[in-house]
Image 1: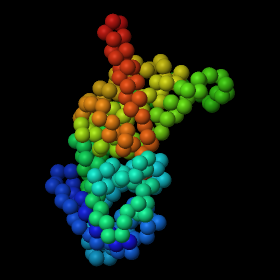
Image 2: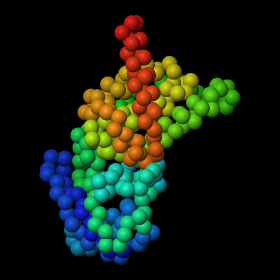
Image 3: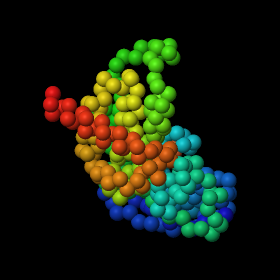
Image 4: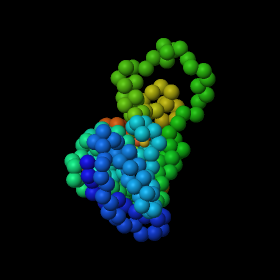
Length: 250
Ligand code: FES
């Protein structure tokens, strides 16, 4: 395949970025999108030019590190797919592909296609955990969990924190991420003791980090590579309202 690439280049957080055009020939349709970028970087190094910085780690849809806007879509045009799982066979020979970093005020560009997503870490640090001592693994039947609750908690726990939800939302809201990270704990018995403080603190951290408000556009869920449902946002809103009322009357 021969591809025409428009790639975002930015030297640092404070400098202005620009698109650079590259022609890349001989791309295998079996290569992944990140392997195609590796090929581009090899070509740039051979030409004595600077390679393009981009984020990646597991390259199998687990870590959430890869974060690219491809032709205007977070993680590209395929549903339920991270950038590292996207294959070049989804593109046509001769295509022009525009590659940008995730765009959001709370995700400043560090360099080229790499953004700083530590704002997500701050939300997790505010309550995305359980502080009880759990000891060694208990017997599986010691604490029964209804099947439906276990399934919903596991679905929420699939969130890999990639930030596609934020990058796709016109308000750059982090409600889908926050609701998944609070939700998977709030639905299990072990998460009940800290449920109220968890939702209040995580939402406060989300607001403080500069994410926008949720207006139920739904782009976040549509772009999510793990298909996290908007239902978790509705649940977070309910849990937040209950926690707030309890706090006012306590
Ligand atoms: S590199 Fe880990 S999810 Fe893409």
